[in-house]
Image 1 (tube, rainbow, N blue to C red):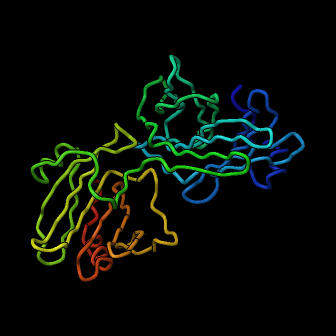
Image 2: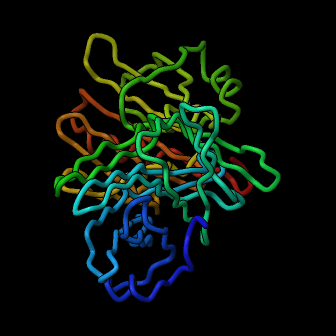
Image 3: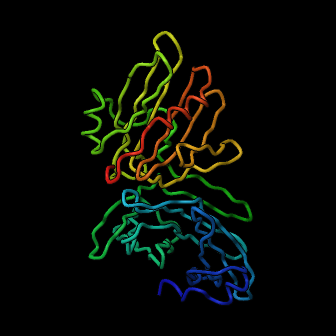
Length: 315
């Protein structure tokens, strides 16, 4: 039995909020693991609840957005505190995914259950070396893989919380792994979708480089198309990256990033000399980086707004 009925009343009374899934205690332990979601985009969270309703540990995962091209978002959670020694995998899956297979450094894979509303929650034995996660549909066919570098890590050891964000596509970063190609047409052919390009750029910029770059966490997802324009004899540069979306790791406003409007959709702008702007429209995600112009932040917003939305029914 991999989980108990959701809405376990003792856990809900201890936590003060609804619980969707309750995992049994780890071998040798007594604390149940109550799993739920909060926020938008949803964060999956877990709490270890002792028999006397004492909450001995809590973990909240980073937000994640699964989709057809990136069907799993996941966090590996490790707890060693207050009599609890446990390791669980939490996340979300895209519609149609019924189970996740954890490929490990051992002969047999470990099945991780998918619960209601696409909630992923299951246990990995301590010491297991995770290699990848496969999203399975009815019949056992894999429709996507998340490799280990793309899985978040959170640990809670003796009251100290540490973590590492899994690799995401870094939409506003510089060029990544991939191949430089001879023009937009070839990039579209290799990526499998048409590029959407700005109708406005700062004066004097010319197309310099076109690259096709794989998703670092989802090896079977469509790659990004990354294009840059530069001005000869200056440091002016615009770099635009786009890929089928939504992003598995959404860009959210924070202390360093402000929300801006990009022709009716939300973008997140970070400007510290170099401007970085990330936004999503329909099923496409974009990141633009602007440097060396008179006003990089304003230019980034104007460039983004000049990328037209596709006609209805077009990618």
